[in-house]
Image (cartoon, rainbow, N blue to C red; front, side, top):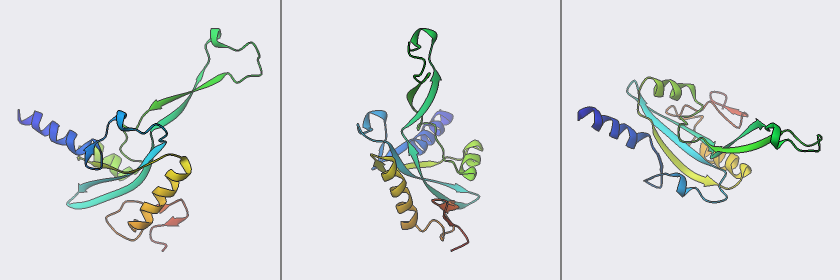
Length: 153
């Protein structure tokens, strides 16, 4: 019973939250491309955070089967398949990946949902600047847009 409660608490902490509610696939707006997120956890008694972005879908190339091959050989022999992949995502940050692997619960919060890749990149950078991720020690972000780096400001 105690182990089941522990698992439930960890799930509640680690599920994606949006505006205080658990985020599910049916909440994804029709034209949405991705979202800006903030992940946080406590490592060695220190509260740490990370701001990033994630696409709702990933494009995967697959070879066409022989029966699906076009009669015109000039056409591409690959098709693009969209696949949901944000559920199991725990950041690109190595510290958070390691913390997840070591069993630390990670709080995952969606800050905003974006309808284009351009808007997604802009909103990520905007949120990182608003939070001063390169100046404040609790943030694990090492750079913004690959142009502004922690420790060089």
